[in-house]
Image 1 (cartoon, rainbow, N blue to C red):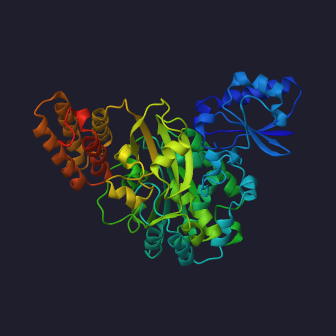
Image 2 (image 1 turned 135 degrees about the horizontal axis):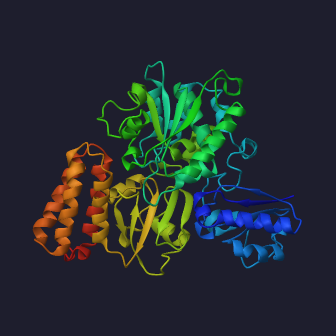
Image 3 (image 1 turned 120 degrees about the vertical axis):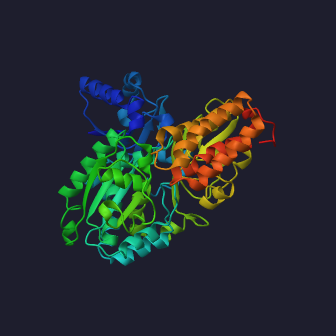
Length: 514
């Protein structure tokens, strides 16, 4: 029986993957042909979705983008034998924009059935856990520390230090919490892992539990990800059934339980302490720090709170060693980062590469330039609270410290592209407006500052006391940066000031005056 691979990823579904599946099933059945359709994850090349891959004697052959109207001609041309057609792409892994990636965390995404334990094992799954079961907790933590892994959720805090703190915190109960409340605009790497390879996240969380002595884990999932929830719950059930979760993991005597909890749509719950409040059944408000969650976290117990990609990077580290992972990257930014290209870009999607590649290479070598064909004017990196980077900064290497040096952030690796038709004053206003909408309201600089920020930008654009209001906007941003309780208010000035500094003409201000 011929095997076909068609993605169950949300992006592929939104582009018509389900209709393609139904068309193939109906038309092959009518022709008396038997096919086995595997619903895999997306390869991340979204401009080619829905992508159809067929297993042939010479390997997997891809076609895309396929819509349901193409199915008849594909079958007639010999789709099931991997024959030529205008949509024929060949082996997707040999295409330059895929071949030149460094896929460590995303090694299996698009390759396997996401919820099949057998598929996972056949592609090096659970090797990291097998190694972890032979080690003491401190030895596991050392591997993670040696790898140089830093928090992929945006804060870039060394993961090994956080784990070591929880390891050494005395308590009768500890927790592992995965922050899957991926709310930044233009980001989707967490979702792609949870939909395309949920078992790597489950394995990473299990290893974290063994490392610090935690027996319970929670995945705090944003409510807008129903497909991820379904995949996670299927994968968790499969892991329990095969002994990879539960009271006696693989006969080791070690325990780790895991479940998914849904958020309620609040952006602020992407902040770790707000997340913990919500997970405890309370309103999502930022906690004062200290104490840190690693000491007093969920239900007052020591808690590891890590992002999806951070935890999903752990299995390859425990499989191949911390030094293997550390060999990728540059400076203090080690390993790989799944970059997400969105906005006005010809080739949108996910590209996992080692730190050190420049933003220009990502935009043009991988992204193909703007979708409109117009010059790229501004790129927001790191979500809605990230700074706008201008063309003169495109040669900055993707590195946490290099971006900090230009007053920008890498964040979660989301890259949103704008061509030269964008109005940057409107973008700055949107940043303040976003903060008004999403602030938890606990601290005054964020709650009131963002509201006043919208008003001040409106006055500048309207030409009302431009000089005085520009000074006022800068002063307001300074107060928000240093007076806010968390990054919600503290980082909102990043996009505002970068727009003001680099594109003053959009505010009606002369160059060099802003």
